[in-house]
Amino acid sequence: MTQDSVVLIVSDRPDRASLLVRAVENVLLCRSIEPSAALPADLPLVVVIDVTQDEATAAAWVRRVYKLRIPSLQLTNRPPQGAVKTSSAVRTLPAEAPRTVILATLFNLIEAQQAARARLPAGRRAAEALVHRANAVIGDAFEAARSGQPLSVAEVDAGTEVILDAVSDCGIRTWLEIIGRYDQQLYQHSLSVAGYAAAFGAGLSLCRADQMRLARAALLHDVGKAKIPLAILNKPGRLTAEETQVMRTHSVIGAELLARQGGFDAPMLAVVRHHHEMLDGSGYPDGLSGDAIPDLVRLVTICDIHSALTERRAYRDPLPHAEAYAIMQDMGPKLDGDLLRVFHGTVIGSVSDASVA
Ligand SMILES: [Fe+2]
Ligand SMILES: [Fe+2]
Image 1: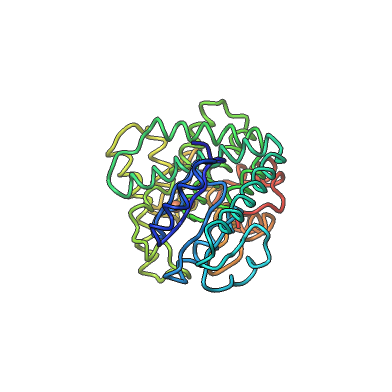
Image 2 (image 1 turned 90 degrees about the horizontal axis):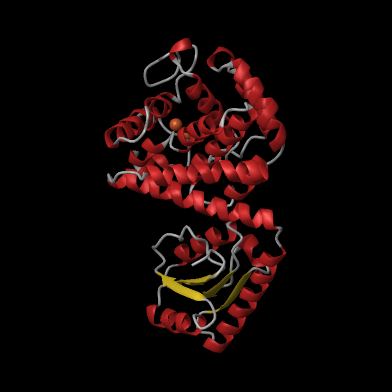
């Protein structure tokens, strides 16, 4: 199954969904899922949203699919809301439209999307495929951490290779632009920090093994957040002091989780445990300072802070790169000034206004 060949039907009417699946799968791979299911990591070509019993869920699916620029056909009892109404890639039909009309509209969308994909430059198509792959790897890693299963070290390494290749081939700007279309903020942040780390490692002319070490550590630096309650992790606003204390446990939880399962070396565990330490001793969890904080940790900390400042949060827009850099400069003795300047020269200069929305 390739990412380009699947029609996904999200439906709360199983009988109708199976009729559609049968009609479409003569032409393309097609499957249906319930509205409560997650969007598959292999993104579909076109999505049919047949969610008629719960308007909020239907609207959430329309937004999710629209954000990923996947054309969709919504079967609805109401007209669509807001900006999506104007997009030619979002079609709507009455919930009880005849099946022939639904199929004609759907095949029209499929043909348009296949033509659009064919027009994409090969490099961009390859980059999108690599991002899908890396996103699946980070999703699996967080899922394993959440459910207490061991993470696959081989998979993490494969995902890290993918990130190094994608950032080296297409640049950090394209990387950020593509991951900006994903809507799982935690995965997006991990991929963003890992992308910055890949670009930073290349900018520092590290050997491939050290670039791998840096990007792998960046990819899993927040793995402990898999154990933070979702009400805190996904809170649509600033955290209270007590919630912040809970959130801050993620670095110790992550390091202990990876140490318990084995397969990750001490420098990697140090990044996961110490990426919120500051050189002046004001960070957490151990209040380390100066030489007690290894270079690998300092590098990931810079990537992490820059990434967080330039990502959208529920309570603020993403900051422009120049503003994020100015804030980091103002952090003075907390960060390694030499590394920060190299980060600016080798990474920030090449992303200019790109941001993770
Ligand atoms: Fe963190
Ligand atoms: Fe982070």
